[in-house]
Amino acid sequence: MKLRKVTAASAVVLALAVSATACGSDKKDGGSSGDGKKIAIGIKYDQPGLGQKTPQGYSGFDVDVAKYVAKKLGYNEDQIEWKESKSADRETMLARGDVQFIAATYSITPEREKKVDFAGPYLLAHQDVLLRADDTSIKSAADLNSKKLCSVTGSTSAQNVKEKLAPQANLLKYPTYSACLNGLQNKAIDALTTDDSILAGYASQPQFKGKFKLGGLKMTNENYGIGVKKGSDLKAKINKALEEMVSDGSWEKAVKANFGPANYQYEQAPKIGDIKS
Image (cartoon, rainbow, N blue to C red):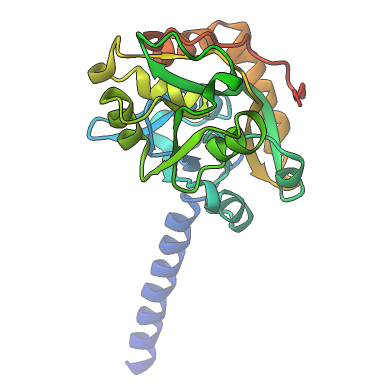
């Protein structure tokens, strides 16, 4: 009798273990099969027009790119597990396997390529300035000299302008881009600087419609890529998906949908592997 009880208990334990293993496997990237498994993707949660978490879900150009790529890899939208990918955490998230890929205004640089692999680029952005719509005084980087230039705490964009392009700019540090936008609207500052894609995303918000414009200065090149773990075979698969997104018109449709209200003069889709210095 005791032997039968032990055997039954062991069977229950074994069944639970098998069940737990099966459930756990759903959390991992199962390649491109899409057979009920999940894929974890890193995006930004706080960048309107690019990657934003809202009560209605996730939206933005990076999100649209990630959805398209995931579909080509064999995953439906309800199989995507979105994870916030802050700039300082991206390499660590990929190395640990927290996500299978990251699409989060992730500029391809030689330093980053030592740690992760990049598919793409899928967007060529530039460092630019956001101005009030009626401001005609800033037409070049040199015009920023003696102007009040907004920098988000921790950002290098404004510092780059101050140190290299307009050393006489009055650099002011604000805690968030939203605070900078309010300061720009209230004339507490003259310009906000970061990637033009990010600026276009913020300027496209309904509450700012018609109030701001991009300067079009193109002060740097920012080649946005999709980050994957070093040595991952996903790189080639994602590159193929990105090429298809451009060829079938989905890329341009996503750009216009997310940046259109800001009249963003975007570059044409870059060729895979074409990194502009």
